[in-house]
Length: 123
Image 1: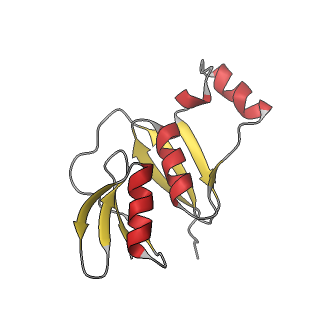
Image 2: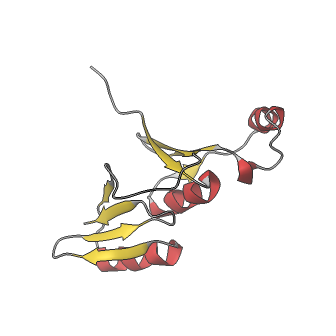
Image 3: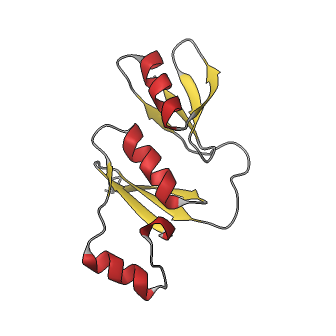
């Protein structure tokens, strides 16, 4: 029987989206770049981790991977994350301060979009 290991998010700029989600989620952080990882990037012609085409956010399971893709997001997500907060309004304001956009307010949840437009909900 399989278990959930990673959630992978296609995006235009993995480093900045990874930072958003690391700040959004309690206990998560962007995986540090050690010498071996920096050497792997340099071997691909990448001198700055900001240009890394795949960025890992650890803290779960699941881990979150952000990978660069050439196409822009089109339409509604087929999968989204639901977050739980003790104070939904305070959390929505905090996430908006990190760069999320409020899309819809419902009685029991609020729909937001991350900085690249990926929808998620806060309960």
